[in-house]
Length: 88
Image 1 (cartoon, rainbow, N blue to C red):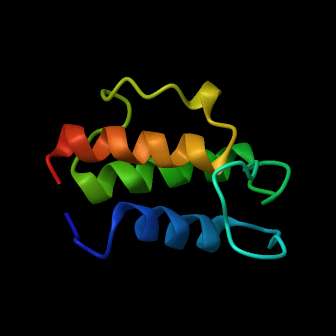
Image 2 (tube, rainbow, N blue to C red):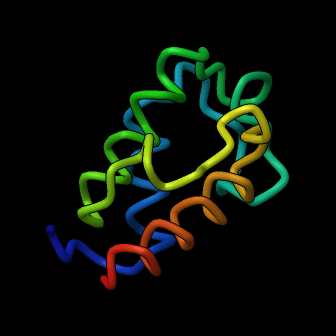
């Protein structure tokens, strides 16, 4: 498990890596992953797997509902859940 910044910094770094579109201004919780950031469904799965790996959690066994992943805030909530499960 890596400790590369706060939870928000980790999520922002990951989203920035996968986003195909850049919004004007800073990222915020209400941005939609598919619409505003142009992240496709395969990239969403890859992002959540990487978050799980960062926290030492198997994403499949974690019980995370990827179907509910629509906004940056949703992704941050999943990251928080994974962090709690992984203890870091």
